[in-house]
Structures are given as C-alpha cells and as structure tokens.
Length: 365
Ligand SMILES: NC(=O)c1ccc[n+]([C@@H]2O[C@H](COP(=O)([O-])OP(=O)(O)OC[C@H]3O[C@@H](n4cnc5c(N)ncnc54)[C@H](O)[C@@H]3O)[C@@H](O)[C@H]2O)c1
Picture 1 (cartoon, rainbow, N blue to C red):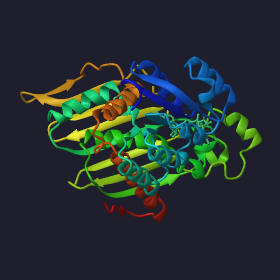
Picture 2: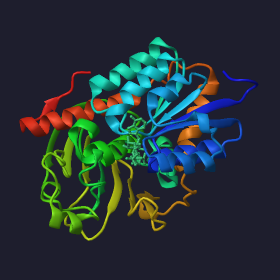
Picture 3: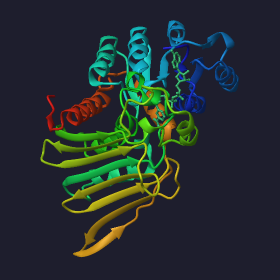
C-alpha cells in the first residue's frame, strides 16, 4: 500500500462510466486519483485538469497506465471485452481492481479474472451501482427481516422505448460488447434480483432474444440520421430485446426482461417480488427519475395493508467505489474475488445459449 494510509487510484475509460469513478475517487478523502487512460485526447486533457492528474500520468492506452505500477486501485470503464485483459494484467501487477459491469463478455473470460485475483491475492470487484438505490436497500432490509415470507416468484426488467446506446458503436457489436441489452441492462436487474433473493442457485434458463430495431438503424436517439445514411454492415449484431425465465434451485422462478428499444409508452425499470406473506414492487423510469416508488402489499392483523416505506437517497457509483475501498482496506480479500459477478455471467451465457438453441438450458455449476 502507498505512503501513509492513502491509496493511489487510476481510471481507464473517459466516458460516462469512467467519469462516475473519477468523481467518486475525488469525493473520498483518503484516496488520490493519480492516473487516467483513454483514447480521446481532448477528454484526457480536460478530465486530467479537472482532477489534478499530473500530465505525465495521462495515458492514451491502458497498458501504459498499468505499467505505471505505483497504483493501489484501478477502475476499469472501457468497452466490455477489454475488462479481462486489463484486469488480469493489473491484478498481476498487484493492483486491486474495480471493473464496470458486466464483468466480461462471457463466463470463461470472467473466470480468468477471478483466477488472477486469487493467484495474486487482490480484490476483484464489479460495479453494480443500481444495488445502491435507496429503495433496493430498503427492500433488501425488509426481505431479510422476513416481511415477505418465502419469495417464490419474482419479475425484474429494464425496458427502453428508444435507447440503443451509440447505435453502431462498440456497444452494439458482439466483438466488443459480448451482447446487447441483456449484457448491458439485464445484468443490473439480474444482480438486483439475486441480491434480494439472497444469492439462490439458478438451476435452468429458458430465454429468447430479438433484434427488430437496430439492424434497421432504428431505436436510438440518432435514428433519424441513421435511417437516412444507413448503418454499416455488422455494426449491429446483438439483440435489442431479451426475455428469460429462470428456475431457481428451491423451485422459485424469476422473469428477467431487458430491451434497448421497444414499442412501450416510456422507459421503465421494475422489481416485483411475490412471497408467502407479502408482495413488493419497485418502479422507476429513467435512471435518475425522482418519481420512484416502493410498495409493499401485506396484511396487518388479518386486514390487507399497503405500505410505502421512506426511501433514503440513492448511493450510486460513489457507494460502489466506497464498498470497493472498504474491501481493500479490510486486508482479507478471500471473499472479494468477483465470484458473484462471475455467477451473473454464467446465467447470462445460459440465456444466450438457450435463445440460440430454442430450448431450456440446465446450468452446470
Ligand atoms: N454501471 C453503470 O451504470 C454503467 C453505465 C454505463 C456504462 N457502463 C459500463 O462501463 C464501461 C464503459 O462504458 P461507457 O458508456 O463509459 O463507454 P464509452 O464508450 O463512453 O467509454 C469507453 C472508454 O474506454 C476507452 N478505451 C477504449 N479502448 C481503450 C484502450 N485501448 N485504452 C484505454 N482506453 C480505452 C475509450 O477511449 C473511452 O474513453 C462498459 O463496460 C459499460 O458496460 C456501466
């Protein structure tokens, strides 16, 4: 660890996600943000200036930043297929790693990251920042306290009306993203569901995927332009909607929907849980929608009751980064090797395999 008790952090990736990590590190008093990497020269300059990162520690390429070797912490916010090569190299150099979600493009690659964390005795964490939402945390507390009884059925989804990210960019190409909205948005909702349900084992998966908008240049805010000019062949080879039905080991079931584009009135995220003693629902629209609700349906002394608990503010990325630093400072990394994120990757692989095969896939844990 660095001088005194301060930790030295670097961030790879200068887009929206990377900027959340930079802001979080800048907000945490015992960490210094000392290195940045990204391909955009302008952004490297203005972000470097904003966060006082020395000019000689602003790198166009990630390898140079990792070779810097004087880091304790590294956040990876680069395209998904770069997560594993960067993480394995950084962990090998003794750096603790916080990767953006999804952990990697598939479970085999994610496993290489987990093994590198184990081999080098370092923390590998993955940023599932939507778990940090106030209503998710409150619901977790109520479920753990037994308010819903045994939860036997759950539904989660993140659906967008017209939200393909960067149609034609790395997001919409299998070679750089690994998949479409299931990989991008569904992974957050799968994470929330498994977290709320206390990490059940997924036994089997039946899924389907569709690509109805992207291949026609539709479904993103840039559609109007793209419909006139067209998109180059191969620039959209992932799904734009996925639906999955998961059987859990105890007989419980979970529905998981995700879309980047769909004919719906407006964007929607939801979590619904049905238990033996109560039901619960969380609804929100766009990620920063202040108009969000947590409703609980149960009974009080035999009379049906609806509860709307008070919701604390959302934690977002700063909480994910703080959690990561707490794990690093704990000194015992054995439970922090990215295994939960790997389990999400195993389920997502099974969803894609089921969609391709057109039948149920049993998971081999
Ligand atoms: N947790 C969340 O809420 C959330 C939201 C958005 C994106 N993400 C994740 O964050 C990651 C990045 O997404 P984004 O939206 O910020 O993407 P982006 O395209 O805006 O940014 C990607 C960055 O990676 C950099 N990069 C690419 N190749 C590089 C290389 N060889 N060396 C150094 N830098 C390189 C680019 O220059 C760019 O700055 C993805 O894994 C995505 O899934 C997470």
